[in-house]
Length: 192
Image (tube, rainbow, N blue to C red; front, side, top):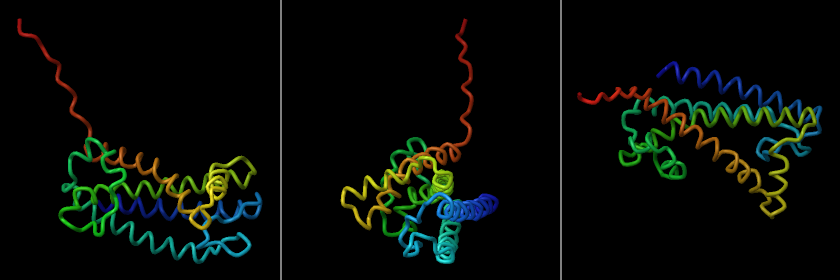
């Protein structure tokens, strides 16, 4: 368990660094601007210190929840491991620590870690596209949503749209990893 949490922490820190560096690269060279209003300056720059503090707090939370979930992985409802799509949209609950909720919340928090890493990798990739002035994925999506009148909610709608397929992928990969390798089917011999 400890090695998985450690690997998550190392990957999180590395991908946060890639996100920060690619954001500065996109802003400085490609005419990009920070999209998240919480960490954006008034002129579209990046409050790096604010971003790092938010990421540090998020890392403490997510690594702690990953460790908690890995210790309780035997409590995952096997139905989620067989069909991870069952848990795709049922992540709204008050507390993940309730005995009634643990069969899905444990699964969710194990799958949440790779989802976070994929989101960070995607952000760094998208920022890099902006920096080299190549067509990126987020900008047209954000403008399309903003044009629908979403206003300040545009950022969160875009995050939801990007998060959902990555969340599904992480659920599927996590379920497969937790199920382990399937036993090879024994050949069936007809009695003669």
